[in-house]
Length: 211
Image (cartoon, rainbow, N blue to C red):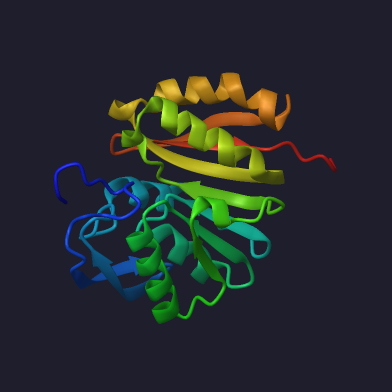
C-alpha cells in the first residue's frame, strides 16, 4: 500500500493489481481474486481463521452480515454454508467490494450483496453478524462502528467478533458489556467464547423478544 493508504480507505491509491490465490473455505477449495489496498490480500488472515474455527454454523435463512468484509472470506463462508440466506458484505473500501462481488460470482454465491455501509436498507435486521473488525481505525471510530451495527441484530441474533488480545480485546469486551444494554436491552449478553493463538472471540447476543 502507498503511504497513508489503508485497507479502510474508500479508494486505495495503490495499484489495482489483481492476483489469484487458493483458499479453503466452507469445506472446499476456492480460487479467489485479491489485490493490494485491501486487508490481507495474500491469505486468509490468522484472526479470521480463529473466528471461522469458533463460530457456530450460521442461520440457514434471514439476513447475515460480514462487517468489514475485505475481499470476502467470511462472506464466502456465510454464503456457501447458508445458501438460503441473504449475505451482506459491508466495507468502505470500494476495491474490496468489487473483489467480493467477483469472488461470490465465481463461487456461485448468488445471494451476496456487497455494498457500502449506507446502502444497507435501514429496516434490515441481522440473524448473525461475523466480523474481524478494523481495530486500526482507532478506538473512537471502532466504537462508533459497533454501536452502528450491533443494535441491528434481530431478536435472538448473535454477533461474533475476533480481536487480538494485544490489540485490546479484553478492554473492548468490558466496553461492550457496559454499553450494549443501553442499545440492545438489559438482557443482551456479551461473553468471550474462545481464546486461541493470541485472539479472543467475543459473542454479543440480542435478547429474544418472543421468549
